[in-house]
Image (cartoon, rainbow, N blue to C red; front, side):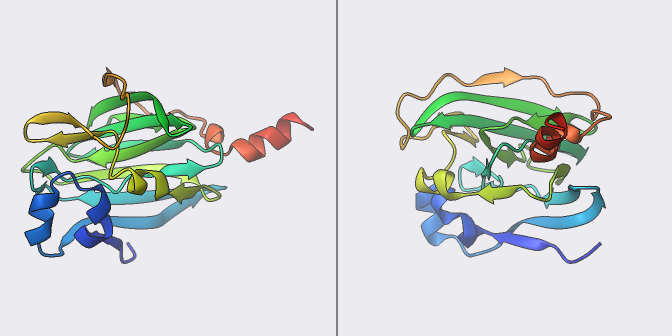
Length: 198
């Protein structure tokens, strides 16, 4: 496996809940992204490893991003447990937010139009996830950065609302899928659209 891209604490300082802790924290490695581990047509397969630790009061998480365009993404848990937090925003307002708790073997689809973060809710076990996504998909980190994180933080005290958002909907929970779909063509919406027009 190639060398990973490493996300450091300082890369994510805008989206950390416990800013008081952050002021005294040293810069350390949070998680490791192995991109293009394999390819399948227009799709790429990545692996992310997130060791257990706390960011002050908050459980370790990914930076969080949305997708430019109409792209979906699919995640598979290879090891450990995860919470996927997904939020849909329109005109700076959250229309929908929900979380999926998943464990080894479970699958989670990130729907089009949703930003998402991945949380490792364990203080003992490394989380290892794999994802399939279109090579054409570009990540957009700007909105979550501007808002200081997603609309909810997952902390030692449970879920806490992000005060930078107004009128946050109640957090709902959805169940993960138990296996990956056989056909992943939906991850390439541009190509599918072209085929339908033939």
